[in-house]
Image (cartoon, rainbow, N blue to C red; front, side):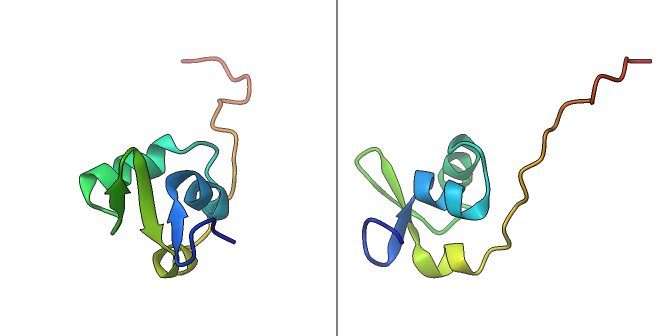
Length: 69
């Protein structure tokens, strides 16, 4: 449930969509790829947009201990 009815902050949207931190969502907002509004230092993202996005499963992006070739 978002703190502001009808909108998620970038932090709330990141958690809802399964991202570990806010930086990716914030950069998409800055680039205009997410329909968001900036109020001061906070990005507000419409709740309908967040709810219509597929959730991203959290994965470890490491190489699993494999050595480079």
